[in-house]
Structure formats: C-alpha cells, structure tokens
Image (cartoon, rainbow, N blue to C red; front, top):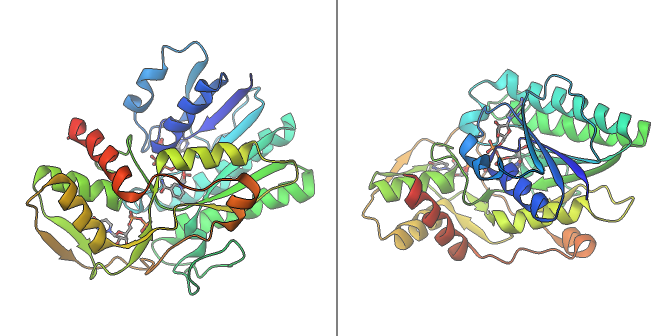
Length: 310
Ligand code: NAD
Ligand code: UDP
C-alpha cells in the first residue's frame, strides 16, 4: 500500500485515476482548486477512509508526505485554458516546480500528464515521441502548449540535475464519463448538443482530425507507466491511433444518439491543429499497453453518462 498524491484529482482524468488507485488498495491524497474540476466527480470517494481531499492551488508549495505523485493539475480544454492564460502557464510551470521540489525532497517517483499539444500543429504524421513539434510561442494555444513543453523540460532537468525519478506521458485526446457538460472539448460538446437537440458546432470545415482514446484505456496506460521499470522516463505517447475527422465524429454522435440536430459551421479557432495521431510503438514495447475500446463503444458509454447529466 502506497500513499499517493494526485494533483488535479477532481478533474475528468484525475477522478478516474483516484478511483483506480484506491481500488488497488492505496491511500490517495487528492489536491485540486476546482478551477475545472467538480466535487461531484469525487463525491463517491469522500466516504472512503483511504481518500483525502485538499483544496489547494499547485502554484503554491505544498508539504505532504507521500510515496508517489501524479501531476495532472491543469485545465485541458482550450476554452478553459484560454480563459486565464497567465494562470494556465503558471499552473504548468510553477506547479511542475513545486511538485518536482516535493519529489526531490521525498526522493520519490513523479509522473507528469503532458500532452500531444507539445507537437503543436504537426508537420509529420503520425507523431512519434522523437518529433520535436511545431508550436507557436505567441498564439492563443501557447499558454498551454508552451507551459506543458516547459514542464517537460523541468522534469528532465530535475532528473538529470537532481536524479528525480520521472515518468513523462504525452496524452492524446481522451474522452469519457466525468467530463464537465460545459467542458468545451469536442466529444462532450457534440454529445451534449445532440442530446439537447441543439446545433452541432463544427469549427472550420470539419476535415481536421483527432485520435480519441477512451478514459479507461488512458488510465491503464498511466498506471502502467508509473509502475514501469526503473530508468524508463518516457516521454511516451498514450492515445488511440484510430483517426477521425470532426465531421465523422459528428456523424457518429448523431447516429448513436438518434438526434435530429443540424450541423452548424463556425470559424476555425487560431492555431487549431489540422491532424493528430499517435505512434504508440514505445507504449506497446515498454508498457505492453494498447487501447482496447474503439470509438463507437466508448461513445456509447459516454452518451449514457451524459444522458443522466443534461
Ligand atoms: P480537467 O480540466 O478535467 O482536469 C484538470 C484538473 O486540474 C481540474 O480538476 C482543475 O480544477 C485542476 N486544476 C487546474 N489548475 C489547478 C491549480 N492551479 N491547482 C490545483 N488544481 C488545478 O482536465 P483533464 O482532461 O482531466 O486533464 C488532466 C491532465 O491531463 C491535464 O494536465 C491535461 O493537460 C492532461 N491532458 C489531458 C488530455 C485529455 O484529452 N483529457 C489530453 C492531454 C493532456
Ligand atoms: N471542435 C469543433 N467543435 C466544437 C469543439 C471543438 O469542431 O464544438 C474541433 C476543434 O476545432 C478541434 C477539434 O474539434 O479541431 C478538437 O477540439 P478539442 O477542443 O476537443 O481539443 P484539441 O483541439 O485541444 O485537440
């Protein structure tokens, strides 16, 4: 049994991770400032004697005694991370410094939830971990992309300079239950719109692609990475290589919800990546991991969740 700190633990991915770690028999300290996270995501965990919640902003240091850290605190939806971009960069960069400082003092392992956004609007397709990325330093996504890139740099410098035991995971678009109905990301937007009979908002011509991973697969990959062999730091891509255009996604959601919603085309946001698809050979080799849930099955489970939410 370990005592494990999860930052961002009341968010979409964090709440699933807390659940998984408790199921494995660990003690979990969940830290969150509720910027995008919700009490309802962790409500069912509050009665568990091995679960403790601390309302705290990771841009301030925290003093706890733990055996492992999963650092997930950071808004992930473009709508939310662009709402207060300065705070977004602070969360990624100062949050990483604070958590790495804690890992250094305690001599413990720490995992960083990085992102496919470090590849920016990629010029090579699909994206292996060796691709260095094409990111604007001044665009509206930079607060997130550059914050996450700097966090990766900090992880590797703490590893080289202070021998901190790090694991860096590059997460590709993930979806599932516990997403906020107003999250703003494409899967939750389309499902909520379809269920309410509202127009489905397609940005641009809808020909841009994404690869969508179901949350259970993602959490399995995250858990395996944290418990992977000594010396394996990553970065490692975790995502589902199935690639879909936003039009295809909209069609699938309409079909599965039997909705009569119409498509509504809106301008493409600045710097919106045209394509994204992970190469997952490294995850297969090092973690014996690959996603099992295909899009249709994952969408059905997510639709069932939102039917109760909206
Ligand atoms: P989310 O917005 O649901 O969760 C983020 C959590 O962090 C929220 O609970 C929020 O309140 C908390 N938080 C934000 N700023 C904080 C701060 N300063 N101090 C303490 N808590 C803070 O998003 P998510 O999808 O669960 O993403 C979790 C992590 O995974 C993020 O780091 C994100 O960048 C990364 N990630 C997610 C995806 C994805 O598709 N879901 C893709 C790539 C990377
Ligand atoms: N998108 C869309 N309609 C929406 C929300 C998003 O067409 O209501 C598009 C968006 O422009 C992007 C893709 O869906 O091309 C994925 O967007 P999301 O915000 O989910 O994630 P990210 O762009 O960070 O991958």
